Length: 371
Image (cartoon, rainbow, N blue to C red):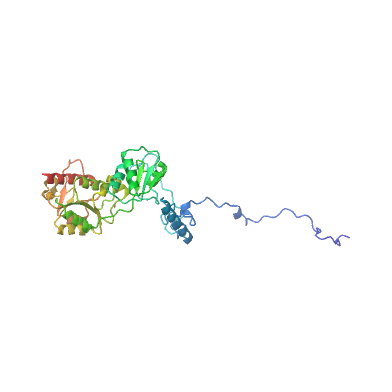
């Protein structure tokens, strides 16, 4: 009789119809996760470079990579936390993702020469490299401390490359053969001539030792001071001129000025290995100390009251102060100088580059002392 069947699981209702909708509640489950973040924006990746707090596990990954890279003699493949904004404006006044900046139509030339098609931004994790065949050979001849010699595969071998490889082998410096692309990456596209020397941070001479060594020279001591020169190429060029014209040392301020970098090394053509360089905390105080030791402090100034060719103090103990590329001598440094010297020029030329002005002055001082 219907309704009294003893069969289990017997259907008692009609077949179920089409299911009803969720009313939009399951809509989010159909969405994708969006684009894949680059490594420097992933907090869990060792390449993370964001501004948010670095997770402890990520910090451990980066330390591990540093140790592995040091053991293998290569650059660590890690990020630089704090160098890329990953807050998307939440911590500042902006809203949403940062806007894309449009480049100027007029290219601005900054930094060392870069071969066409190569990038000019040196990787943050790249070691400090001294590049160029002459600078590398000069540095090895002067026994500059080095940790590795990079040689690109397939380069033309000349006497300088052979000497660099032989000297590195004699001194026990590791020789690393890399591709040109890898050397381009490490140098940021700088014209390296297929060879690079990895150098540790530059060892500056203490200022007191620099001063005493200059006073012990048989000839009249000659020093060069740089006041706020921020371009390492200018610094390297001044050091090269100082070595060429017999200066006994160069000193620069620690802050708001360029130090000895691989670019300065390359521009000096290795002269930084022969001329002692010192960093001072306070340039004005260092100049006053030199004055107490009998030096005449001469500042290069386009509006100086003394012409370079009338500088009688050139034959005695002398400190030549070169101002920055834009503003020249600072107020306190200019007030400390015993003399302000100008270089006679044609009226159509406003001023000279800092390194060129230093070279002209050093050449005139050397000429006077040779008479």
